[in-house]
Structures are given as structure tokens and as C-alpha cells.
Image 1 (cartoon, one colour):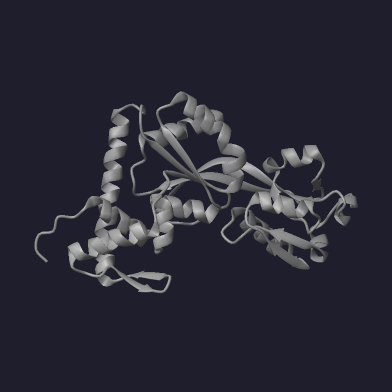
Image 2: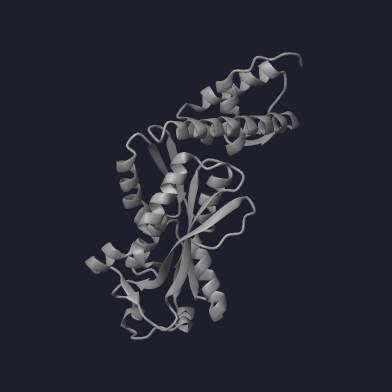
Length: 298
């Protein structure tokens, strides 16, 4: 191939497309147009003299050459991130980035006040929070798109460092007009006659719920899958079923009287909320400082 002078920006565009396996999603992440992304990739292919992607309609796959370039690009950008983290430490957190990923309970109801206090102490830092579910938060950390992730169920991943943060409790909720709201002591077996509203696949809330159903030997009459905690609460408030959600997510709805917590022995489901980081990457100074901030508030 000979000596090639690579355009760094084009390599980064290629790396983003390869990571997303989508030109459109890469364009969204890079805040540019899809034709612009395609142009950068085409020019990089011309510079290297190889085809980097197989394109079949909207589907994208790496060629053998593309996999080689992606592997080197990944190592390159990890090195650059490491350099940036070292420089952030040198600057004493006067500048830098902190990238967080979290499930909806942690992201919506736990982290905002913690982030606000940390931002006040370090106004020069740029803090971002990616709302996902437990699986999404893990994927963000493993792909080095987040420095820290907050998960809401036990996970097993060899590339993760997992640190317990705090204990949470999931409770069974229904609309005030639902038939179970009049039952003084609901049992798990009552769920066999009900529509159970579940979170999407990959949600820690769904994982804990399904594990409880297996322990109880209960199969709901019907299930309804809704993405996100807020969507689940709206569906339950409309009377379409019952669901397990974090007690921390219910303050507003309970105060307004649009949802009710159902009581009964064994219905409260404890679960851990933990912080995860990449096992093989050095945490940034901002991430270490945020962990220390968390411990003070725990």
C-alpha cells in the first residue's frame, strides 16, 4: 500500500460508523448529515485503496479490511482518551468531560441532584448523561462511550468493575380504580389474573420482576411491554394493568393520587443499584472525583 497520510477526522467518522454499523446513527452522533458521513468514508476508502464496508440497502457490515482498520482505530482513540484523561488530572478538573450512562431510575430520580452538586464544585467540567436501561448502560461503558454506568440489576460482564452504590425497592402499583386497589393484602398469585406491565428487554426493572415471577411460580394472564419507567407509570395510571417500579420513582404520582402502591407480604422487591466502570481503562480524574462525591452522599 505504501505510505498513507490519513485524515484524522475521516478516520473518526469511519470509526463511528463501524461502531454503530449505521451511517444514519453515526450522522446523528456526529451532528452532521448522512451524505457528509458517506463522503468522508468514501474518501478514506480512496486514500487507503480498500473497501471498508459491505452495503446492502440500509444494512452495513465491515469488510475484512474494515475490521483491520477498525481494530487499529479503536486502539488509537482509546490512547487519545487516555492522554486526555491524564491531561485532565494535570489540570486539576478545571476542564474535561464526565460521561455518565444510567437506567431510568438512577438517571431520572437519583443522579440529577448528585450531578448538580458535583457541577457546582467543578463548573469547568462538561457532564453528560445518557439515559438507557441496565443493558444499555453496560454497553456504553464497555464501548468506552461512558466513563461510569449506573445499573439496576445484577449483571455479569468480565470487562466491568462493579461497585455497589445503594439499595432500592420495587413496589407493585395500580391505578386507584383498579380492582386490586381494593384488596387489603395482595398476593403474588393475584397477578395470575392480571395484565402485568413490563419494561423493555435489557431493563433491570424487568429482570428483577421476571426473577420474582419465577420464584413465585406465577404467570400473569397477559403482559404489556412499555419502554421506559415514565411510560409504564402512564399506562398503569390509565388502568391498563399493574406493574413493579422503583418506589423512588413514585413521589409525584402518589402525591397526586393517580397511582397507588399495593401492599401484601413479599410484594416489595429489593434490588441493588451499582456503579460500573471499564475494567481495562484508567478512570479519568473526573470519574474518580465523581465516585468520591457519590460516597459522600450515600
